Length: 399
Image 1 (tube, one colour):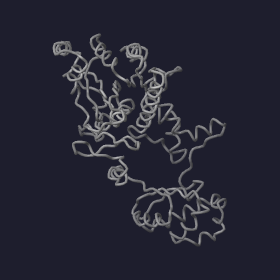
Image 2 (tube, rainbow, N blue to C red; image 1 turned 60 degrees about the horizontal axis):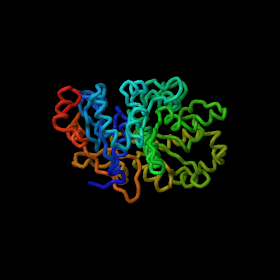
Image 3 (cartoon, helix red, strand yellow; image 1 turned 45 degrees about the vertical axis):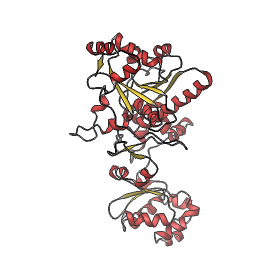
Image 4 (cartoon, rainbow, N blue to C red; image 1 turned 90 degrees about the horizontal axis):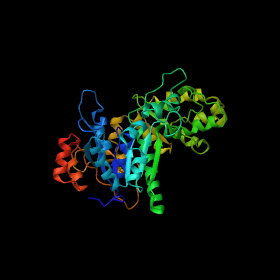
């Protein structure tokens, strides 16, 4: 077992779906002990979400709940809340993304738990923040991060194109990383002052941060138009093209003064440098559509693998439009530790997106079954076998 930088840090994951639990997952990657609180029965509803219709496989659960121990307990009865309070009293971090009214109803709001443990860092994720008229509104990353913040509107291929749906977790995982950062900042403050407190973020705020360039334009009074279709882009050298085999790649040749001559030579189009339409950067912008059509015809003559070699030799920054299958098999992703094997050797998972020199992440353990560790966790918290049996008899505790 790796002795991670957060070894000895006790974290309670009393959240559901992705954003809150994923923040706890990052802490667990660096050695924190994470207790996953779930309702008895089916547990966290995220368990039932599957990537492939018709297949009952908990792929997504394995990603977001690795390294955790599950405690299945009903928090509504006083007996269940008392168990949570005992755990909170010895915990360092409590994470939740339950809607604010639900927290109040369950008596797990920040004020409730900080009264039990003033050193606790209360990590909170909400859809729309914790102030203003919409603080109590529910939301998912698709609605609060993607749709609400202009991101969904801006990635269309043109003003008349339909908005594009987001991928599962596309806003949740960045928001989880933000909550992780807030929690670690709060832990640093606790080291200096001895005080815990609330570390909070929201899907809305993270979506605005992700769309910050265009939102900042608007904040300075600029009109922000939809991005133009591919053939109307202002720069043909920062565009995507289809190859002979139907594969696409995105090129980002931004330093035209230094790179253009080598690029044109590499694609055997040096004559374009003498074309009055393309002699200067200003001219290339004015004639971007014509240059795009010329480059389309050139790139359509070879397969993507051939163009990879040509563009890499020319020093052109580009990226293939990879499928998910390709991303999951990416050798570079494995080399940098972005895709890592489970400790039991049964496949890979996606690791948290950063590293710390001198620190080795915990080898990811399989996510737990509902209530898999309930009895052991209560025993560690000081409950006797008779007390545990009583809680099970009351239906408060599962397994």
